[in-house]
Image (cartoon, rainbow, N blue to C red; front, side, top):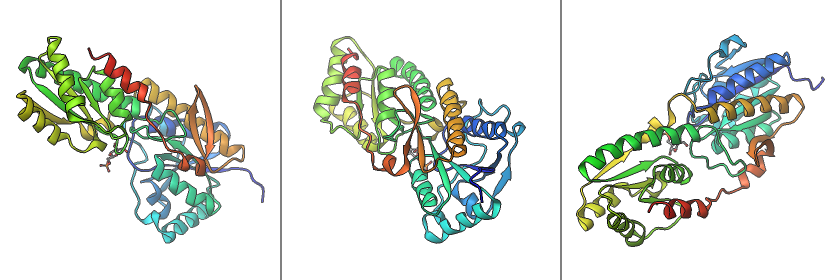
Length: 324
Ligand code: F6P
């Protein structure tokens, strides 16, 4: 048997992210260019378990760049976490003649890909998560659009907070990571940004910063709380009761995962989807496509899973220094 790649399966797994469609589109078009048949696998790893698949064509991905979500649907497959589920997925790949697989998603998706590689299925991952918490890459598809969506909402919120001279406590998604909250907080000129990576002191990081704003003539305040901090309502209650400022809570939630992808997410999705196919065709596997030092590159999946992302404390300092 030769090692030529004839059919490449493409799936999206975990949370949907704006820009996933660009990665799918690029992967499909790159397959077509190399006379490889692209196979869409629906609903994440469940699609492999249940043979929920369809051959794709260049035409089937036309106009996809501007669409949010994922045309392949997605799932967090519990069944795939079992040995039996993984074996069924491998059987599907063998039966359908899928020689290579592209798994688009976050670290849960990478763990699934690692299991498939260990069972002999050539797999390459594309990082996609609004949390941007994957250590091996400085950028994961989705987080730019999510930040822009949150910023747009907060700008609107600021108008009404300003009119009522209130404090707004806004929860930004990110699971256990504070990247999105920090990026959004810096871009909206937040009074205070509270992140899971940095222990905070209510007096210093909230009260004093509101007082500083007041001293400089501010009448409305914005506190950004990362989802991973988990104390959004409590913080709002304390501001109202201890400082006597009328305060409202807004949890932005899943709207951050929707919408037409930004230029950055479309271009990153395109570059990473293209590279994933090129790697498989070149005979490489067990990799995560990464963006590092302005270049698209690769890291072995195992290495990617061992790495831990830290948040640049300087970014928080810059956000704080430039508030007032
Ligand atoms: O990982 C992306 C993310 O949106 C996180 O920010 C959030 O904690 C989680 O997914 C929400 O997951 P679900 O869509 O299952 O509610």
